[in-house]
Amino acid sequence: MNFGTNFKLYVLSGSHSVNSVYNRVLTPVLPLIVADFGLTYAQTGLIVTAYAAGNSLFQFPISFAADYTGRRRLVVVLSLVINALPVFFFGWTAEYSTLLFLVFVSGIGGSAYHPAAVAMMAEEAPERRGFAMGLFKAGGDFGSVFTPVIVGWLAVVFMSWRTAAQIFVLPGLLWAALLWMVFPRETAVSRGPLAKEAKSTLGGLFRNRALMFLLLLSSCRVMIGRGTMTFFPLLLAESFGYQTTGIGWVVTSYYLFGTGSSILMGKLSDHFKHTSFIVGMMAVSTLALALMPLPDTAWMFFALMAALATTLGPSQGPILSVMTEMIDEKSRASSVGLLYSTNEVAGSLSPFVGGLIAQAVGLQRSFLFYAVISSIATLAGTMVYRLRERQRLAGE
Image 1 (spheres, rainbow, N blue to C red):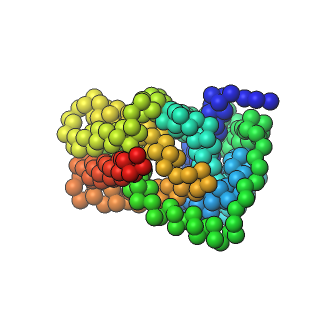
Image 2: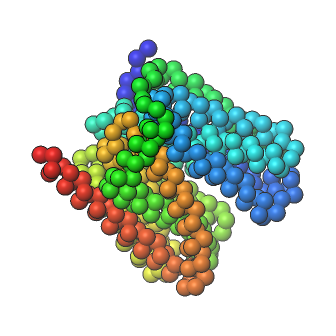
Image 3: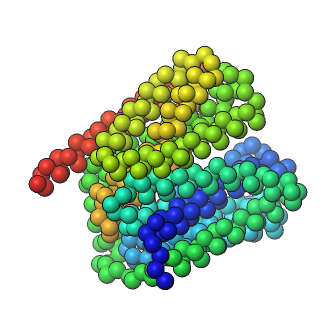
């Protein structure tokens, strides 16, 4: 059965929504889990850390395996299945240590997803990768935005966080089956000895100067995103008097605005040079962050948040588009794995460093720290643009 390219792009973007489900499925019911197991704050935080650890530690090795074997469809399908199955067993978890183990295993499943899925998106739309990657980014955002609301509602309806979580085994299994049917069977690629290929792939990636600047750019973007979304709720409460419900709607609106902008900006980037478009987006983000200490009304602050939502998150699509263009197919998944691994490391440090700065200079002025990070990202994007233009002129 033949499926059109657009249908395949939407299926892959939908799978990104499903992948995001398992990163958010426990977030709204953490208070219920704390009460169920009698956890401390540190033990509660360890649940989130367990998923992040599984998601980051194995990202590059699995991405290289996808390139080495050529079985990207199989890797994405197994990722969704392994991500989903532990959720089903939450319902019979009697020990906190067992819950941590299951969350860690689910994180391992998640670690396999992005590199192979991004490589598949790039293969399906070589002439409009900006749009494809913007659609892919929007798909992930969709899952992140709506999962907490649905899980919370199900927990109330069934009066059990365990039952609410168990239901979410279905999206992963069903979407894995859909992917298996929609995408054609892959043939194994012929590669050299494993150790030699791993050394060659890793060496080639690290020798690519444009890629290194792109990793810096992307890591800065993630640092800003993680840090600002940690402190936006606090700033809304302390400076503008917002309560929990109002903060929730503002944050949800921010993500929804970014989701729509991801598709639009991705499509626009196809009509410009992708790298210069990224530089422009990061420059706008830098300006918005630099102005955030100034607003004395909530509406002025919301305008700056809107500018950030339009440019910061949506820049991921064009970034992935540039990366998949500059890396040949046999190393494409590996390069994306390297990108996500470095992003996770950088992103994990950002809220802590930002918190220290906020203690020293005040919450609103601490956003200048993220403006500096954004300016570094803008400079890194400029270097990528210059290096790629130099390569293009040399090839003419």
